[in-house]
Length: 214
Image 1 (cartoon, rainbow, N blue to C red):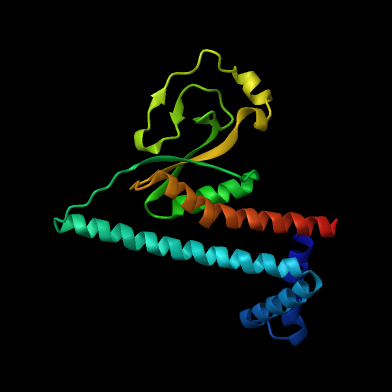
Image 2 (tube, helix red, strand yellow):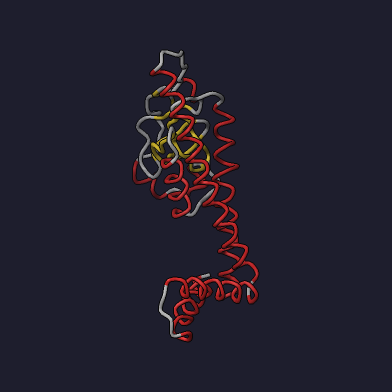
């Protein structure tokens, strides 16, 4: 993946030199020509770029929609209309394992008005605790009633926790605060389908391209 991108950028910078016209327009033309050439050489490079651009477009659209919904609720409250907001925290179990991908997902959620990534936790038997830390307090997966529970007496020590493998501890999960919880299950599914699954597809394409390059 990195080699194809570097070649694409190299062609982009070489194009203005060949045409003796050092303008942004020629730089973009060079990048487009390099993209087409790299896509012919490796089809998945073009597929990755297309899906990445589509995901970015969807994120921008989701941000716009969230802004409009939030503005409508604020204006409705300002004119005296009844608005029922039920803020709370929802735990979203993750299939993503790459730290960069999880960071991108958390950032996208935070950028969308009305939602905020609170923390990265681990799901173990329906309970959550801070990811990579000792178990002091757990938060139930039921977002309708976020309650703190005391630390279990048989919880592992901090040393044991860091030494245990991820599979033995439970899957990662994002704790997401939303300004209005309608259906927590639908909220989780929306995040997984619209944000996490596209990132999973992009990660698979990157891994396939890396295998080809190696």
